[in-house]
Image (cartoon, rainbow, N blue to C red):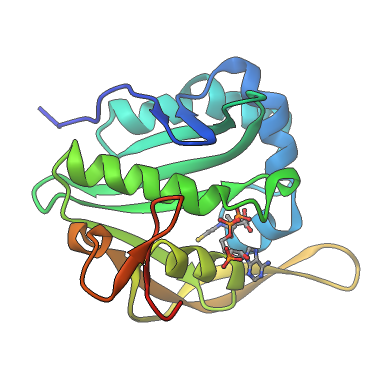
Length: 211
Ligand SMILES: CC(C)(COP(=O)(O)OP(=O)(O)OC[C@H]1O[C@@H](n2cnc3c(N)ncnc32)[C@H](O)[C@@H]1OP(=O)(O)O)[C@@H](O)C(=O)NCCC(=O)NCCS
């Protein structure tokens, strides 16, 4: 039988990462109909309310039940507002590795929520699920996402040439596909340990002392 992740919620200082439910659909549709999401992810554009409903009502849960990974809604603990998504995918159960992708809603960017979610999921995968590797694959020009990878302590491993299709605005307001490279970043359990020469900030991030 294919292994699956347990049906869980993860709490951090400011966030609750929990399974999607029906009520998330309107905010999810709004979050995904965004320039940066369209540019850097492969979600349908425009992202309709029907797309959001299908995801929140079943597709997200099927990621877990099929053993592919786990897809969680990221919500603010204090307001319970939907502020993002985090998706563990392409799980290799023998190697105990998986890819992690994320989106932060336009109304919640720049608050450190993507980094906080990735770090929380990484700690859960490493400590509770005995995973040994997390991979992030990020389009070469996606500066914000590269920053997230760097901030959580990922190591950049190399370039997958021509491995992604990003989208760019055309003059008539549509979208054009552009082939681009992906940068591969990885995080291993030891990257989150505090090593000599590293310090840990209030959010639990390990940084080199010079940072
Ligand atoms: C990438 C994304 C998830 C970042 O979300 P976020 O919650 O704003 O990220 P954080 O607040 O955790 O930011 C982490 C770091 O990136 C920096 N950052 C955020 N947006 C940035 C931008 N547009 N340009 C440069 N740096 C940026 C932040 O300043 C922060 O670094 P700091 O703490 O040293 O200042 C968000 O921009 C997004 O949803 N983009 C569209 C979808 C996407 O690209 N997903 C990733 C696919 S691989």
